[in-house]
Amino acid sequence: MTHDQNLLLPWVRCDQLPDLWRAARKVGLARSNIRLLTDMIACPGGDFCALANARSIPIAAAIHQRYQDLDELHDLGEIDLHISGCMNSCGHHHSGHIGILGVDKDGQEWYQVSLGGSDGSSLSGAPIPGKVVGPSFEAAEVPDVIEAVLDSYRRERRPGETFIATFRRIGIEAFAQAANGARQTACAEFA
Ligand code: SF4
Image 1 (cartoon, helix red, strand yellow):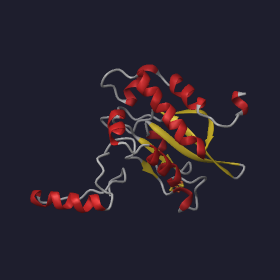
Image 2 (cartoon, rainbow, N blue to C red):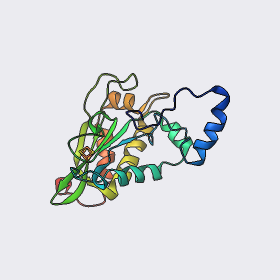
Image 3 (cartoon, protein in one colour):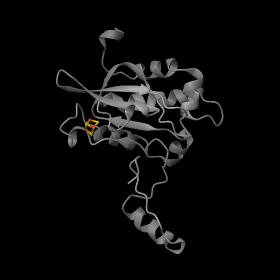
Image 4 (spheres, rainbow, N blue to C red):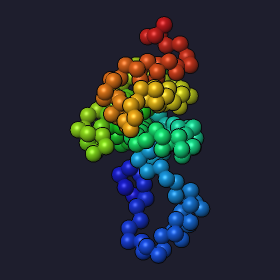
């Protein structure tokens, strides 16, 4: 298991690769989305972890469900999306290009979204934590927020420019505005 939650099968003979691919495909493990949006990192969150403030897996599943189209995923290109269910940060949300952190407000699950983080990889550049976008969002809002941020990227990007490169060029403002525009409920700080 790699740190980004993929299975790595070493020492497979070349002549056995097609059979392995067919077997993996049958159980849903042969999707060509490595390094793309749905190749995300999500901690176990509130479904399995007693320390959690919020669930991570349903958020990951909802985003996964919305982005099923491989052509769209490849068009969006390489994006690191990380989700943690609490500040212990096992999902490394702070270092994701898009980070989602579960927070507890009055016993309810909320999600703080951050943008522009880097884990120091060749794709992402020098390590830096993402910048937080406005007040937290409700669980049901999160997929819309992610979609709004990605639509904003599609509008602003230059040919061949990755999400993180566009973010660094234009800054957080356009993305934050798009994310906050996806709120379904009135928020006191935006009233
Ligand atoms: S980040 Fe929090 S909720 Fe997620 S696995 Fe770690 S301790 Fe549990």
